[in-house]
Length: 261
Image (cartoon, rainbow, N blue to C red; front, side, top):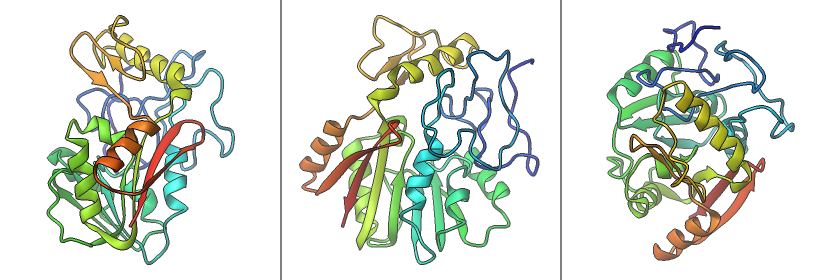
């Protein structure tokens, strides 16, 4: 199968699916690659259901993306009265799934292209809205949302001050609401590293610098770096901000930090 592929134009693209995309597409390198270790190509077809069956967890030979487990976890905390903010929403791949259950979903992203595409993809969803905005400088009133999420390792990917990110998320969350941040579990280090090796081989990111790649951090020779936050990292941040938090794993692939206000 020839590659790379670019993101198809709506409406042929189904939000929430996993696909392989060029680095200059609306996708972020490291977030949307799906590969079978023994297959000659990549699965780019829209999937109305998870690529990994529920409960199966990590499968040998698959670059397992934990996004589905994270979405299901967030959905377990959402109902029709929930007003939700998705930080770093991209083109709405998570937000559109959450809108099936939440009362109102607002997505923000610093990329104008991402927001333009999100609005196009989700144009028929009356309970969704999208804004170009910096997650570390939110333009919403205090106590505005029931649930604020920053999943799929956004706390690292944004390259912003993590204390500011968490402080802003907490500021716009109502009393009695919750804030959820997530990163990757050390249990999927080898799988995650392989996932980045594939992307490096295909030219989506620079060659991996194996002398500097360790302890959850992947460093490429072109300067690209993918870091993670451990449970201890999250607890240390919460302590600095005088916040009560709990940390737990989901699907042995993600580390969640939950702050209940």
